[in-house]
Image (cartoon, rainbow, N blue to C red):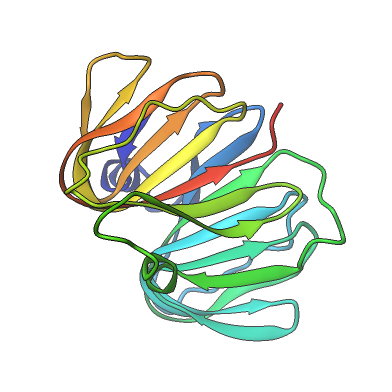
Length: 215
């Protein structure tokens, strides 16, 4: 699957705050949208999840604390942990990823990271994999590819993979098929066992990758 967040959001009815666009045995992904000043009535969930703030600003109340979230904030919330958005100053658009794996109470209740802080590890001369989250149910990190390198070698993983492009211009190739042009906001889902690669970079790529546990 490859598409863009703008296309997914435009297809979402205004009356539907959350809409899933990916349903797999390993994970679910969707877009959550709340207007400025809206009340977020969500309860804790039965699955671990990752929030990626795409636009807007608010406060996230999680496990008895308050955290400001803005575009680029990435928040892990363990299953069963109470959380909701409050003080929504500007309309929120959030990528939500649920993993279909048993939660582990030994994992953190929540974790907040900032995209720009993680991306600071970029190297203009080589591709960099910068993981920021490793729990029992998911691994997440930024893949930072400078245009000067031009791409990466084809890779195959034992688990499904979800990609969100924050920045850059490139082509994405799966199973040596027809290259697909990708850019900011592109979402690519690759099932386990399928070879894939970034190629023909024309601008530095910042790509979020999320992996649930293998099979």
